[in-house]
Image 1 (cartoon, rainbow, N blue to C red):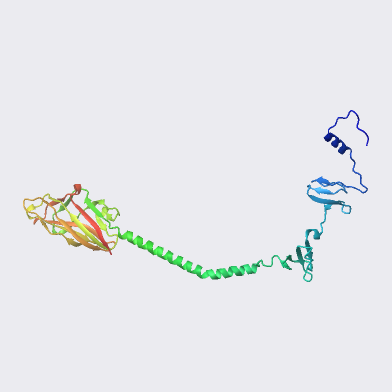
Image 2 (image 1 turned 90 degrees about the vertical axis):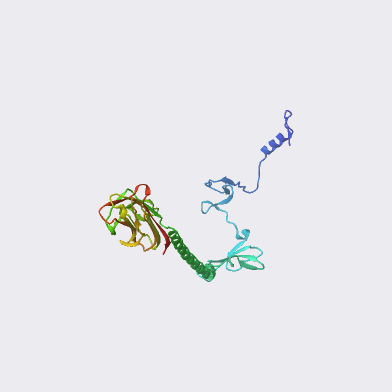
Length: 322
């Protein structure tokens, strides 16, 4: 090695870099540096690290790069009919030597506890799984059937309960009614046997719309026992008050059901207050109205039933449904 020029003033690092830059690699054989990248080289023979991770080599026969084949022994697996040496291989892909086609895979095995063992040997087949499912369903089916029966019974009970609740709610409706005359009504004096219908056409209480105001009558909405009452204020117009007699009656389906006692006027009285109250058993659709008769021995005059302010009124109430 020659001496350094007298004017060189290098540091040790600079000296090392200079030596490395001047070195040349010399070999007796051919030395091929590997290529890298994702683009395949157009010719060989340098090895190519595809994507800098996969080793490919130049094939002169194919005229292109091909993956470097690896020996199965290096990967410790064996493909074949006969069992391999367990000291060299960890996995054996067993193939068929008799069935068609020859070489078809039979099992994937690993050497365990002194023998080659199928890694999928304990995996249940689809038939076995279906059998397990069928057995489970067969075991649960009686419980499912019982549950369905319970649900059906419960639905029936709920329906019955709804019916009972509806019936109870319906039974609590007592159809309260209070009606008045909207104006004074003139009633002719025609004798005790001739009745005039009272025109109660103002329903002041009727939450269930059970009273027919247009026809001054009550139509029973259901079978039951009803309390019925009526009170009138009667003023004399042209009748003979000294001999005046009145009859106030409840009519059921057009016939007299029950009447009050006669209100007999005494001279010189000109105002009377007859009343009637009773219990009436009605079927659905039966009709109740109120009528009165007047007699004075002459039968030629009139009396007035006072209507203003509720001086004459009637009431109906369902006491018990049947």
